[in-house]
Image: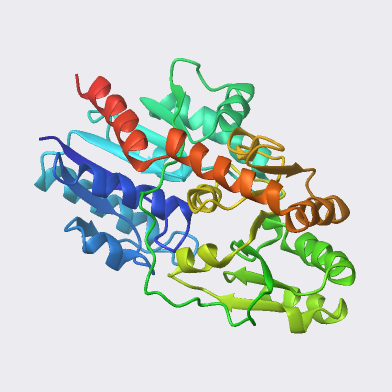
Length: 360
């Protein structure tokens, strides 16, 4: 039974945290697990698994974050027999951990970088990984190709697709979406940030609303662009048809209500919400960016559209809504593709092989 230390730069509610939680659940009975992470909204989910948690403040929020991280890392290594360190999503944590110790192998899972400086972040990731990581996991082949292009050593990196639990957890029986019976629901689940492209989904919905009656758009999530997006819905005169739910933990209940799920992102690695959508047997209309085309086969289990193209987004959503036979076929194909490729069990097994290789 090996001692594994997981390190993550935040514990919000997002794909990175869900990914790590699945690993914790998968390895909990096989290894001794420890968590070095700032407190956050999802901490209670990790504590419920019995993992030992050591906190430090988020670096960007408090100047004591770095010294607290260093103290925590040294304490865990001193007090527990740690055999392997698995870091998620943060170049700086790989750098600091590698500087502070070189005895324990370091695994680094890259969950994708976003924003205007993402090219720089990938370049830094390749340099830091080459110097300090013993294995790097990309969550999509598209991510692996980016890192190889930025100079990461080929012997370091491998792709392990994200996975999510099955059966998917529903909470209660009632539909959480307050719409009248018979309405078609277009839905998305995302952090309300620029990179998620929700403004283009609102534009597409405005186009659809003029052509098709009985539609609702449900947007699950929160973020810095929330008020801006609500104002956009008012400008487009669709505010009475758009439901902003804010942050929700019962996201599977919402997905279960969607007729079509949309992921209009401008950049993505391998979004867990996409897997949740196909896991519920929902056809997905998604941007052809990052790892999304590795999940969605255009015309088979969903549609791929160019990013930032609201008219094309509307066209493909309409094709699904107006063609019940096509919807049924794509829904069945979506569920089948999930079962074959994107289970938590497969992700845990493949990650375990990385651990075994390094521990040997």
